[in-house]
Amino acid sequence: MEQTAAAVPHGPGLNSSISPSGPTHARLEPLAESDFETLTRLAGTIWRSHYSAIVGPAQIEYMLAGRYTPDRLREYLGSSERWMELLKLDDETIGYCSYARSAVPGEMKLEQLYLLQQHRGKGLGAMMLRRVESEARSQGLGVLMLQVNKRNTGALELYRKSGFSVREAAVFDIGNGYYMDDYVMAKPLEPPA
Image (cartoon, rainbow, N blue to C red):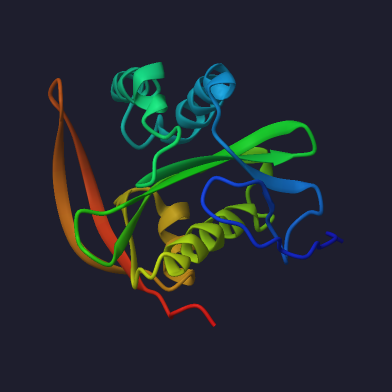
């Protein structure tokens, strides 16, 4: 049986235990420059194991090469518009999430939410999602939106169970002859209690 810990009040980018329904030692920590190499390796492991059947190895390598460069990752450091946090269980980094203010007023975008395969099904992905929702609410934003590949059935199930619905289907040209065939999903957020 998993133990729980009380949530700790915090703002974007501050350390926090992420509970109330996950392992006691799970926590989110803001991305630091010293984490870039760890994050890049973790992203490679997760993407290669999860997306090979969805988009294929060549597109995975193209997307990893463009998304996890030091310059791209530095965009999260000290920003007041976007955040990235690493999910740690004890001293092991096992996942990460990023989120940003959308170009649409009143809306937050969940950019990324990834977790190592062996830690899925334990409520950790849902805990990261609740964290992002909480941050959006604390900033007075009323909608959380995201893009998810139409063939990513596990993620689609998590998002639907969490109250998201499909806003539109869209194909995004990401360059080099590659496309993302996604659903854009959205969830209205209740104001903070």
